[in-house]
Length: 594
Image (cartoon, rainbow, N blue to C red; front, top):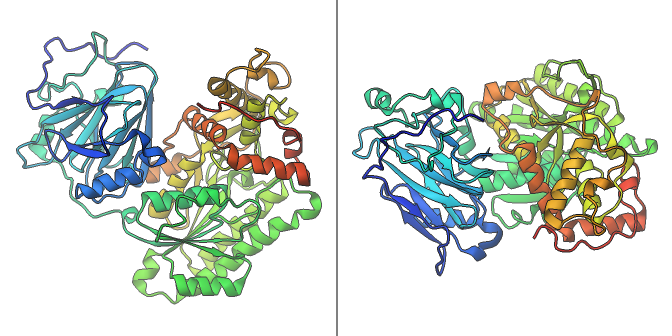
């Protein structure tokens, strides 16, 4: 890529800049360091902090609280740059969507810069910076009132950051990275900076000096505590949503789950002891239980995820789809509507019933047909998708007939940690790692749209926060890949982590058929997610490559979670597509993801 700018010959470092590097720092415990503008903090964590050291984790939260900073982060973002000298920013959002941010480098290294844009302060226009590396246990906290940007120092650098409010295109703004008034000493090493057209067009600081920056405003709904009833919160998707709501918002969650075989205790281990989380074991078809739950919990919103999803069920068992997905949804609506009608005016304004569906209700596409949108006609092709389509219609009917404030969110194909072996991605990960021939089904050229489950959790929270009543939002990952392309990418990632097969062959050799990753002529299902981007400002934080790497790494590191599933298959026997992948005699996987 041809860089967009030449380096500025007369750039000099501002005397007000505090440039720090703590890449190999050590200490007796976590600490927080104020930079030259003291509101900007460098958080230094212990190397042994473990999972809590993840960006925005418990260790970080404790450090911020100790520094007198109480903040809730509601959105994750990720930026991957292939070349050193790539500059992003300088970005900020105005009122009422102004954001505090927490940055770290996941891979590679980058110089992070914070520019003070708080009006009427003597520090307006000054900046501080810190070099962050993937090896260091450090994160940079920027309060509301700072524009931020970074310059990558290495190839393939990934920067992750959390924000205290969701992205809003209407309120986004920024400052020119090469504004002479700022005189930022970008570490380009003689290279031309690589800058997007949008960032190149940002105005200079003087524009905001004359007009001011509006940073005050009310908190968004996402930052106001709510009581949320989540159904099906112990499954693959539901547990991701519950983890998101507890760890990244101030909401209180009641998880109503039947705890079927699809439930996972381990997926909720991180929130089980949180005082804002409670589990209620029960069936959404139990009308008496539902009435009690609404009466005692007093929810501000319902996030309905409970569903039977195993499309490989034998014909004799397909009645389960109708019972849970359709009848169960209707009974939940009945209980919600009875509760809603008794609320006072303020509580009724706040209440939402959000139904989570699937893009499979729209059927399949030929190669020349446009992607699905929220106005596409339904054409379900399986008992599962038919039961979900029926539930969608019932939800909208309750909204139209009884005035219940309903929103529908339909998602594309999902992948991520804690997904069961009915699904392609975990089958392929464990198969490739164990050296098993992958099933013929994975060689299909069917193209799907793939969405990382943590991105879905954030999207559902955005819909609950800002979705328009009566609307349908399609949630896609902007990642169209054939099944064969997905399995090929998984084989390559597994090989990155554990090496080639013992006989020296590439792990791609486990995929049946020719090694041809060209796309196919059938697409099922692909979605047009432009309405959620336009209306709510949501886009996936994880690229397909980044999300898949996270997923492969998780499965290879968590054999203790998935190994019992294989043993259960060996005892009880698999059914459907899983029968091909989950055979007996799986070898141990050593040196996984080290």
